[in-house]
Figure 1 (cartoon, rainbow, N blue to C red):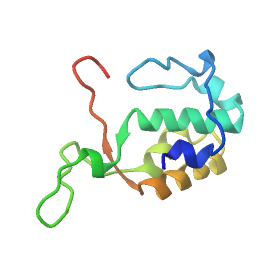
Figure 2 (cartoon, helix red, strand yellow; figure 1 turned 180 degrees about the vertical axis):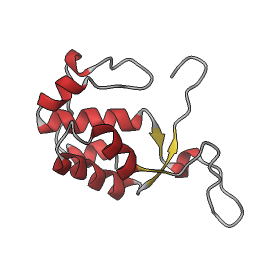
Figure 3 (spheres, helix red, strand yellow; figure 1 turned 90 degrees about the vertical axis):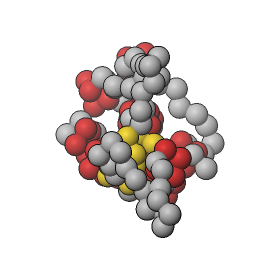
Figure 4 (spheres, rainbow, N blue to C red; figure 1 turned 30 degrees about the vertical axis):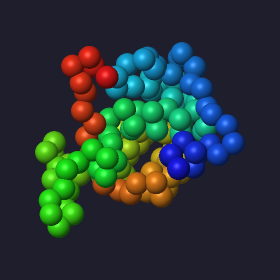
Length: 121
């Protein structure tokens, strides 16, 4: 199950153009728009921001013979830390907590940095 399925089990959420450049390899929401957006749009925008920067370590990080991950980009990155640093003061704490609950249920607290390929994606 994807994080978006946990957040929005019966529908998809489309972000408006005012949210930011959704074609960018790393989505960066407009803070002024985000602060006034609906809770649903805030969750969707924060998830898009997070998902364009971080990967599930099970999919993105090699591990040694004992199963320990071998982070090469300074990880693991803590979901709660990076989301609160980026969105604290812009989005209410309870909205951030809702996203973190879904992230923790799907993958956990530790994430790997998502690489950007030569095409920028």
